[in-house]
Length: 502
Image (cartoon, rainbow, N blue to C red; front, side, top):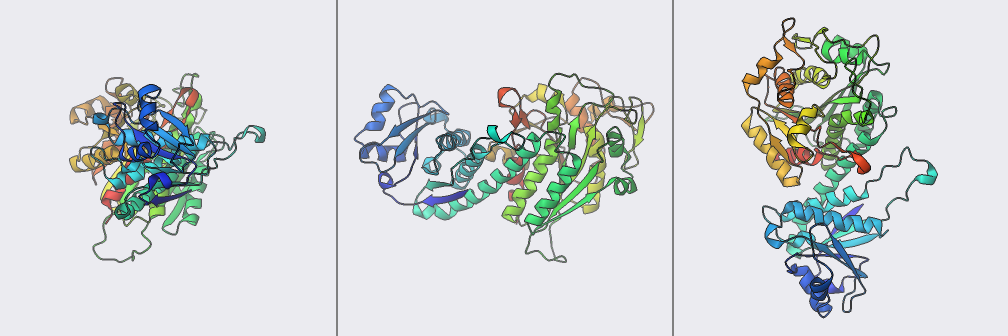
């Protein structure tokens, strides 16, 4: 996919298969739409008075307008002008890109990034252009029969119309957005793959392939014996119930220009992704309805791999390390039982009261492993609790952290990319719910504040560094007729890392 800038001032003379211009629901034309309206003797205003209401996320196609070289002018509804913001812009770009894909067009020109909106820069808007295009281009077809596979999109190029003096800023945003989109689509693909294909071994091989593709990445995939040598008893206890062997993935990004002994080198940022490639709940078996969606329980791992892909494509000037404990959680004669006590890598003992609270059992050992890197910050990403879905629905990712600066940086990154999060409480008073009579800590704290007590559990293993937990159970995938992985929170994570690079 190619992205470029179109800086000619003669908008009506641009020859393209599709030209997107923005219009507002209160009858106001964007500057680009006004140019096209004048060139076509008021055709746009006539349409706004009659058939097109310009509501957000709607469009109308006008063909062969007099005085306009573009074959199609796509009026993109942006809602009311006083409510126009970055999210509305991103929605408009997706409407246009989705139209181009659906109409089998090879190229198009968007003028939407040239429209100013609140709390946004041109760089952020062109980033959103490339991200929206990547989202529209995604197709899942790997397990479809040849006769059912859709033809791949023909769209090859999207140009952004802006002033010549803004070209450098726009190109920066397009480059960042394309890398984020590529990372999101890797995340979506891994999530959408069936669990008999996307196994822990498959995730390990994906990390190795990324390391071959990008010079800045180095992958290490630890096997069962190596995990045992690390004394990750909590993680391994979850893996016992499955015939699929567990893996512990370490994927490191080192900027290509960095020297190993470079002075004043910043401490790395560590991302930890939950990689349960199928979660049946173990002995605490889940209900059968919708259990197929538990293939998405590795979306934390998938988002970390997608983020590292984007980081490597951008060759970010900051060391980033991904840690992924991956296994299946199945019932068997070898599986964890409620009442079992296991010993984590940290030495803390854990009473397993519910085997379906397994994500925290694999993450806690990875959080202990992260200490060896003396990180500047550690962020774990996990489809951890249904309680977070109850609390926040499918709009915001749950964010837990006692580090105010880290939490605010992540929240702002989410706002900047329309990949929003909401900060949840992490008060010490909740820790009492995790008290056990038979171990140092219980793995659940009961129904009240389930997402909070899950984060409290993880916090017990993070004393050595600034830490944040992202619960993506409500945002990692969509259910229903549009079932599929969302690619979140790759935009949030990449934007945060961009802010932390030199």
